[in-house]
Amino acid sequence: QVELVESGGGLVQSGGSLRLSCAASGSIFSIAVMGWYRQAPGKQRELVATLTSGGNSNYEDSVKGRFTISRDTAKNTVSLQMNSLKPEDTAVYYCNALGVIVNLPGRRERLPEVWGPGILVTVSS
Image 1 (spheres, one colour):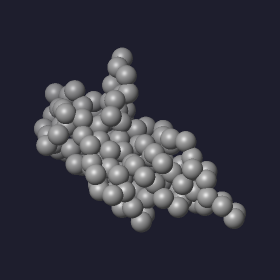
Image 2 (cartoon, rainbow, N blue to C red; image 1 turned 180 degrees about the vertical axis):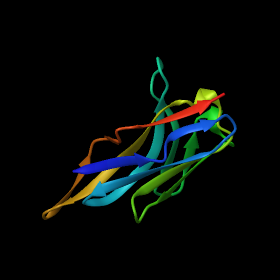
Image 3 (cartoon, one colour; image 1 turned 60 degrees about the vertical axis):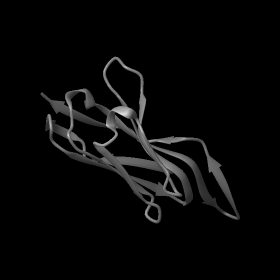
């Protein structure tokens, strides 16, 4: 019912920048929280940054001051501006949507957590 699609990943040198974007599609009424997670090879998936519809953000400590999350609530998009990238930022980055309410005929329904397929970010040293 709701699909998340990421874009903007790729290969960048250490110290460089990338901007990830994620668009949610479907009959969406609202999304409470949108965010980004990442999973490096051999490691567990971890939170990178989240942003509520009310504007409250949360960042993983290692990205504070380097990454900035933003969203367009009306368009159901979320972006992650990543600056001063380090090789340890190399991972598959996943877009996440929490508290998704969709419009159905005659009613609304709250969906479980929704994940995008992931996009690879590689930072070379």
